[in-house]
Length: 346
Image (cartoon, rainbow, N blue to C red; front, side):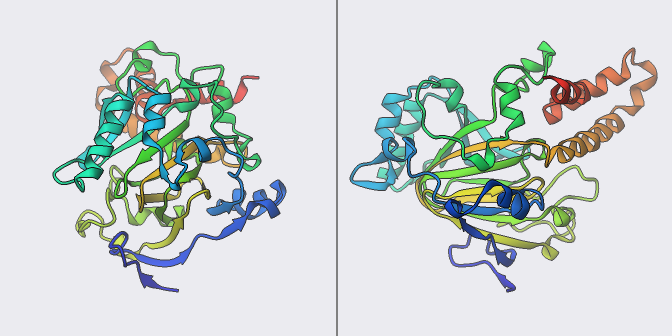
């Protein structure tokens, strides 16, 4: 199949050549998941895994399980600070981030919905470290397919980076974990990106629907510039032919993820995601022995970029290699030393 995505206008500027496979996970064993999806690095939608999750009951309205119970969430989890993306604002390679309380976020969402979002910003709560913040509330259980999670098991006991100057940086390199809750109204979205560390990720819709557009790693050169410094931000924009001359050659996979479905995102796959309804999702980034080489390859590539960027000060720098490693940690989230400690620590 070769067609241009259309309908809602989301993804309407790209060539969609196929859809992500959908599998009933109750009929799938772990070895089969590894052989069919993890080892070959292929995306898949898994069904039948969330029926026992507490979040699927508590976080949705009793009268309409497709709708989020925003008042329950604001009352039960009154976080003083949540990170929110303004979906209408572009800052560097991402959306502008704001901090507000959970109550402020919910009040904004409810107020925007009541007036049809007239004149208001679409705000998307992202990267909420729910498990760390509310450990006594067991909202879900990690499916067996994703339980071999070296990244979060390590972070439960150890930091990735020990340099206090970098750990206290605005970018919060010393991340508590990579287990997140996302919450956003219909129309909120996430720009085109590949996941942190080139990790795997999994994303479960507690309620709502999402449209995903995927690009395989073998075609990532179509969406980055010649200098490998920037990538396409929004595939629905008029993408600059001068900056990204091969963008129209990219062939995308499409997926509409329904409520109670989980999508497995393999390493290095660029993706852009749009909420088709008011949506709450649970998301993990993770890696293990099957994709550790993706993490190392990213570190090595980013190290060369960081090194080349400051090459002109090598002769006047007392610790040039140390500075390269500090820049690598600040830009990528870990450096060579962190990676070595991570893979050797029992």
